[in-house]
Amino acid sequence: MDDDPRFDQARRKAFRLLFLRGRSVQELRSRLLERGFENPTVSRVLSNLQEMRVLDDAAFAREWARSLAANRLCGNRRIETSLREKGISDSLIKEAIAAARKELPESDALAAVLRKKLQGRIFADLDRREKQRLARSLLGKGFPSRLVFDFLRIEEEGSFDERE
Image (cartoon, rainbow, N blue to C red; front, side, top):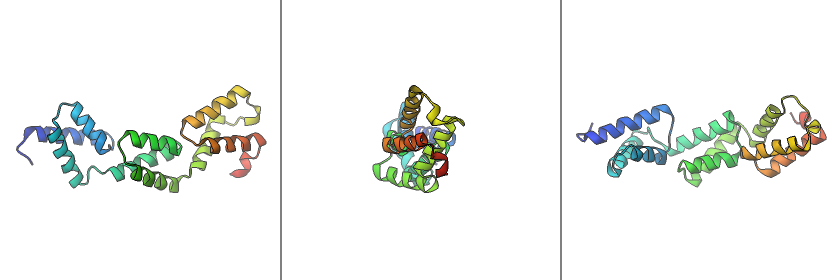
């Protein structure tokens, strides 16, 4: 495609990286620069891949958010942080989270995580430390504190199963 052997090498490396998993433009730029490719070459490769629609931050953000929301059952805050670390813009982050939450609302994800963590045990029977550990775990998955504590209060009252 190009007479520049470094361009061809960088392009092949980019395709290999994208074959492993989807990546944002910033991630791919960083990886190629780490591999010793010069900035102008990397910029040309990225432009080429974007023109071919192989590299698309909007599509990447939607898929990454969907994966974290549906497969890993993460809260919006965790999804937002992950996408921000990958160099995704705030507007694309909001769109990606909104699309993921159409598939699985945040409250449904929290309910699924809570059921999984309780493993059939009754929340009210847990001791104080276990309840605190559970709350910290849910907060660590990126769920908002208000939602976590509302769910735990409902569970404490024994009406969690009635919500389903």
